[in-house]
Length: 160
Image (tube, rainbow, N blue to C red):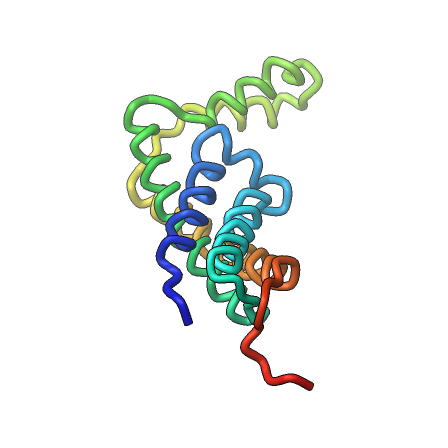
């Protein structure tokens, strides 16, 4: 079977970019960024090598891409946080600006408290591990979907 490194790098880059900072909101839609990255990796692999992947192989490729991409995204997010760029604060501020007067006082105060919390390495690590697990599940799904969509040439399966 041909090498998968280029496809993994491409798909992981897509996942990382679509999961970092403000673009991470794309993942609020059923982890769409992770699904897309996994499918891009499968598409690249099947197109480059003119072959069809088994669904299970697509799922493994998608899982690999999702884990690597979400780890890269976590590192990028941490760097942005240390630079003072926090997408979570900006999003909460936008919600408060648009809906703050309609919120119950307890909810408003809780959002303010969350915005003022400092990000510790421990809290960030827990969040990153959770993100990697969730991304892995959706990456495997995206890879399996990609394998069934991007069929090329010989599948390597015996003829029925």
